[in-house]
Length: 277
Length: 255
Ligand SMILES: Nc1ncnc2c1ncn2[C@@H]1O[C@H](COP(=O)(O)OP(=O)(O)OP(=O)(O)O)[C@@H](O)[C@H]1O
Ligand SMILES: [Mg+2]
Image (tube, rainbow over all chains, first blue to last red; front, side, top):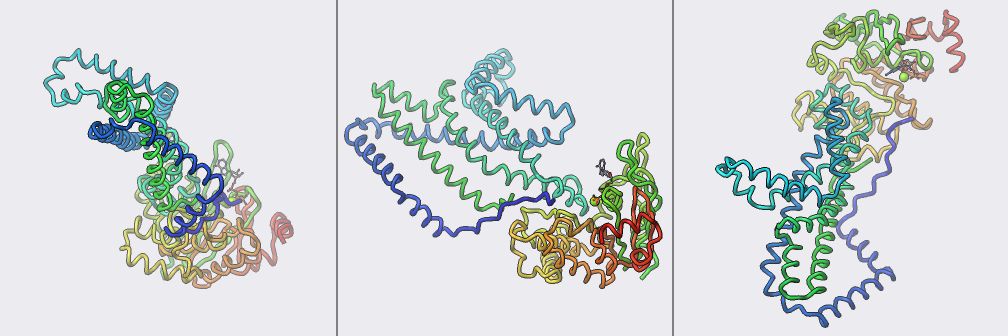
């Protein structure tokens, strides 16, 4: 039996074809009905609700959005970089390292992010405060703010989830492909760089967009440790204007748009990458 | 042509745990030889072949490629390669063709064939690609160079795997049942490529269940049984006048 069992590769679609397929997909009756409902809702919202606060808060909303996106982007990038060794260690690491990586992933994935965030912010924060020497260092201006703690918590959380994904991706690369690389005289490092790592990465990519969306939806937790992300700005709006629904609906719209854009970009990236089996 | 053997295996033993799978096998392949290895399932054919490029580490014995013996050392009673660089250098010119192809699915056909020349042997890309295109023509895949392995039939994948070996200008080619994973109607396209290579006097060691083919292309046939060479000789003798009862029975059973 061959151990390569790969579904046939779909022919790469041209942008025009993708667009045509998209438009045809949108013309389905239930989609049209849903679109009409959404449109009616939008019209009702614009006409019947109070949006007068929006212009005045726009600069702060932009800043909040920037903070949300910066936290998301940085934690995804750093988290992914940490996830790689976490995944490799769990597949071929010596036993202590394997246990360590497995333990890290299990603990982080098994506890609420909110809890981690608070433990890191309040715990580390008060710990650092006990070392006056720290105040003299270049680190102090950062350690006094909330966002480094938030970024740290988001990063290890993403690393733990993605580390588990990478473990599966590394373990799932068929052994014969690695053996062929060895049989042709590749060093261990080269086998990793040329075959094992790219194969694992392409295998993990389809799950990446889901993980990033989940991460986006975790960012409002940062507001609980005084990071002024988009959610925190909206909370201020609600306190100042005594409006309940308008700011929240605005938030819904923005997160939806962000998710949609992220999904679109990542789908496109997936089609750019040779992903066969 | 020198008289130096391309591959020389002397008194090769291999144990897995306490089970001895190879019990003293010796063989010599001179340049241009096509050595066919036949034998029942579990007789140690694959293990022997994989010892030649050290995918399996021999437990005892000596293996030399073009007169150069692998440097081995003994660690707690187990043999182990002593010089990883040497192993890699020798392997780079011992192309292996696997039963299940083992192409790299994230590279195109051309990418699979240029991978080792560029990234192991240090050949310039343009040169490697020109050569890859030539060897792909050779195996009848000239029009498939931009396809992905998953888009190829089994027979095409195996021919691509053969092209990948040809691209390194191998000292010797190692085939491990190259047609066993193929649908019957795809076997012949692969065998005919191998036949061409044999007629070019390329050195190869060919583990196969295709007896008619072995008889046809081999210069020397080895019958392995239970980790030992039970009988060997030119194909006419092995298939025409087998002496050992086990070989006689084996040939009858696969005929
Ligand atoms: N990695 C391994 N660990 C333990 N036993 C092994 C290993 N590889 C092979 N063996 C055993 O060694 C013996 C010879 O195996 P080998 O694969 O060399 O046989 P073969 O002649 O190639 O058989 P086939 O025709 O089925 O491919 C078998 O009994 C097999 O179970
Ligand atoms: Mg075998």
